[in-house]
Image 1 (cartoon, rainbow, N blue to C red):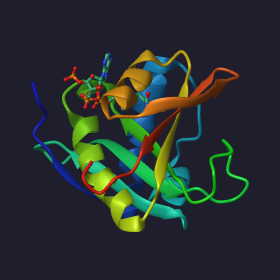
Image 2 (cartoon, rainbow, N blue to C red; image 1 turned 60 degrees about the vertical axis):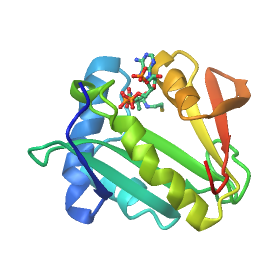
Image 3 (cartoon, rainbow, N blue to C red; image 1 turned 60 degrees about the horizontal axis):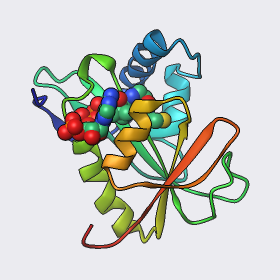
Image 4 (tube, helix red, strand yellow; image 1 turned 90 degrees about the vertical axis):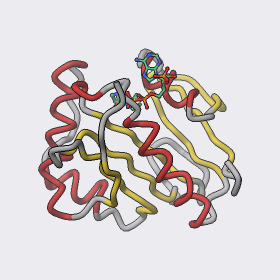
Length: 160
Ligand SMILES: CC(C)(COP(=O)(O)OP(=O)(O)OC[C@H]1O[C@@H](n2cnc3c(N)ncnc32)[C@H](O)[C@@H]1OP(=O)(O)O)[C@@H](O)C(=O)NCCC(=O)NCCS
């Protein structure tokens, strides 16, 4: 069943909700990672290289997930070419496979076009089958892999 939702830009007060989404994901994957509200604020919502950070809300206004798009700067963690976009998608497991990631990307892609990004990189764990399948479904294709990481890339075109 598709989730009822609203997609809007993330704002500062969403930081705790983004943190909860990351905690929900940690609970099922067992993979610890930075997640506290200070981190979600500085890393996603108020990142100075941010192009767009969107949240998806359910009918009750609860954040189900978020997607960030930042511009790659020199020295970025995964050696993405400068000027490309770097995307991250995080959906609470309670809302998986209900079209939330698809709806978020429908907001992110035009933001990439508007920002003039030539390509978008997605960095995914090689053992993360759902992440790999999701980005494939959004049109991304593998351009580099190694050390347990798969990097998928989308060429940004105005018409999709
Ligand atoms: C990967 C993730 C972002 C997908 O979000 P989602 O809201 O569940 O995705 P959608 O429901 O929009 O699915 C879109 C398409 O992606 C593919 N897909 C998504 N999850 C899948 C899964 N578990 N198995 C197979 N295909 C999957 C399907 O093609 C799906 O279309 P369909 O349902 O019509 O077949 C979400 O599962 C998530 O946040 N996982 C934890 C964090 C993560 O892995 N992030 C991404 C990599 S860093």
